[in-house]
Image (tube, rainbow, N blue to C red):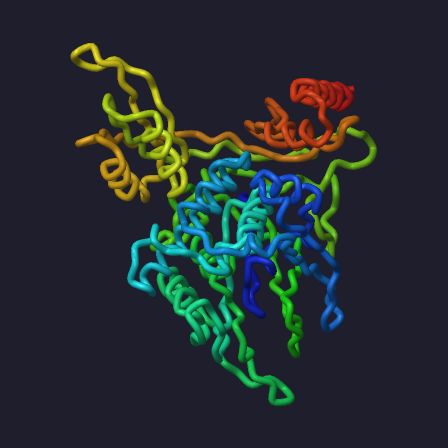
Amino acid sequence: MSRAIYFDTFSGISGDMTLGALLHAGLPFDYLQTELAKLSLDSVYRLEMRSCQQQGITGVKLDVLLLDPAEHFHRSLTNIEQLIFNSRLSDTVKNRASAIFRRLAGAESKVHGIAPNDVHFHEVGAVDALVDLVGACIGFDYFQIEEFYCGPLPSGSGFVCSAHGLIPIPAPATLELLTEAGATFAPTVTLSGGIEYPARMEMVTPTGAALVATLCRFERPAFKLNYSGYGYGSKELAWPNALRIWIGETSAKSPESSHQNHSHSHSVQEVNHDHNPKAIHPTQEHHHGPSHPTQESDHQIIQQTVSTTPSEVSVLETNLDDMTPEGLGFLMEKLLAVGALDVYFTPIQMKKNRPAIMLSAIVRPEDEAKLAHLILRESSSFGLRVARLPRYIAGREFDEVEISAGKVRVKRKILDGEGVDVVPEYESVAALARQTGRAWREIYDEVRQALSSASKRSQN
């Protein structure tokens, strides 16, 4: 089984609606703020989360309030990627966020007839949009989402003001994104009382379109529902102006049929087989938020049963003896941003006694040609080797353990239905160390001790 999210877009989608829905589904507000602080922008904005209710349905409205209006300026794609990749965010969050902005830059460049790196994002490049999209990626990482799906989108109608003046709805970049991704649109209908649907307003923003175009397949999967959440927009309509998300478990899939839209979307994360816990906690029909250990023990870990999963990957390799460390680092970032599962360097010695680096990129077979082209374009190499290799992926589960300083996420490896190892997550330990001022090793050791104590109690 794989963790999946379905975007139920009956009122469209935007970055802030997505983040609000994730918060309503159980993403901890404190955790979100701690992770977003890694962008080093927290001195220029403040997050305001409040409960919102329309037509009797409660959800979350999230606002990004700018403390310095001067920060609402235009940013280039390069500026945005520097901000993201220079942060201490996890690689998964960095790669997803970068892929979304690159997808948006591609659409903007096509609409305006300029190169993607020459695109200057207007509202999209401002602090609020960066917070919305990076925050959404933090939420996806928190819930360990592996597969992304989206329902039919309401096109909206009318005109909207932009930096280029009045433009039709959907905005040209929005339409370009959704066309490339093969999105489906909801039909135009008249509801009871003569209410027109979709509404005459922008219901899918460019940021919302970039998010689903980059990550989603446009269908609704069969899956076991675990959590749901509503994220509200600013306007009030005749129906709840909210994005509804469904988070649950789908049947296991191989990387070749993974969560990305194969024709158009950029894969940005290695498939993790994170599975729904067995019922230590019975699933509540209206429960929001991830399951946590029961209170019988402070450190009890939720159990799972999963199996090893066979699959196939491609390995691209080339030897490089004339590239700078800066160029190699940039190439690694680019490969990870557009879908490589892993990238690493190995020191080697080549002919003429030259020290060199062997670049290795592990990729999905369907991404092989795209990433080989990227290596040849961005490196000094004139050729590369390709090998198809089988691999086995151990099952994984994620949970939280509470220690004296706070909660820390842990990851357990599962083989043949049994947990064979469990370790603290680095980013979670680091975040708590920064919050409390305690040493990283001290927190790490306390978590390991808590895990050991919990294991001994479970055996007695």
